[in-house]
Each structure stands twice: as structure tokens, then as C-alpha cells.
Image 1 (cartoon, rainbow, N blue to C red):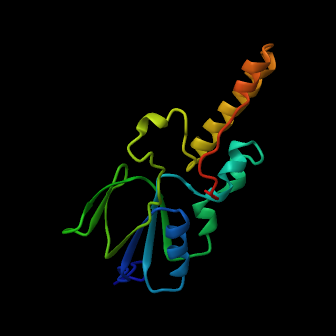
Image 2: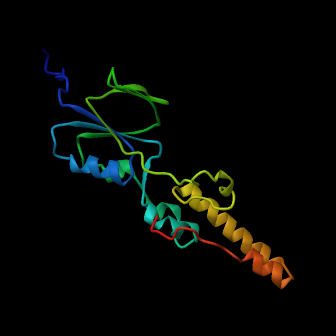
Length: 175
């Protein structure tokens, strides 16, 4: 072997799908472990969801609660971050198929894809009760609120103005 050749990396390969709290915590917890980690997330940032309501109400801007994953993990030598979407798992071949990058093999696979809102069989509620799990959700709610204020400002009828400025919040938890 010449001095320019590298030995193959024989460390176990862990693929983590999801850069939210669970996936990021697991990845950081393994910083000194003898393992190669590939963190896959559809976005290039970690979203601090407990502050999404601040973005929705214009108290904070989106970058205030979204930090780039590569920046967070910049000092962790055993991690590679891929911005891609997992579309299939082949457990027999131990491979994760990604939308853009193709298939990547793994020794261990951690699925930390988070949660989504649910309407419990009442999908007709969705247009009237938007969820708040993503930056897009927060910005959509912000636009709806600001639009209601602008329409109310132009409304002469007090009853119509009051209706435009009536908001209901269902589920007041931190996220």
C-alpha cells in the first residue's frame, strides 16, 4: 500500500434520519463513540419548535429558531450531514434509499422523524385550524394574522371588525 492510500473505515455506520431534538441528541451523544454517523434531514437546519409560536406572532424571525445542522455539528468529526429525504428502507440489504443521493448502507438505523399534527378523523378542520410544527406553518399563520389585522383596519362595521379580530387557539402546549 502506498503512503497516499487510506485504509477503509471499518467503524460501524449509523444512519440517523431526522435532525430534530431526538436525532440531534443521539448524534451528539455519540460524538466520542467509535462509529461513523450520517445524519439525514429534509432541511438543513435544526428547528427549535417550542418557539414556533414566536415566529407565527412576529415576535421572532425564522432564523432565530433554526440553526444549520452542519454548524451545530461542526466540531464532531464522526458525522456527515446530508440534506435529503428518506423514501424507503431495505432492511434485508441494510440500506436506506434517499430521494436524491440514492441508497446508503448502514449497520444501524435510527429513525427520529418527529411528530405531526393530527385532526383525529376530522381533516375538514385543517383549513380552520392550521398546525404549528414547521417554519412554513408559522409563517402561514403569521400571514393569516397580519391579513386579518389589515382587513379589520379597513372595515367600518364594528361587528365585522370584531369578527376579523377574533382568533381561537386550540392546544396551548409549548409546541
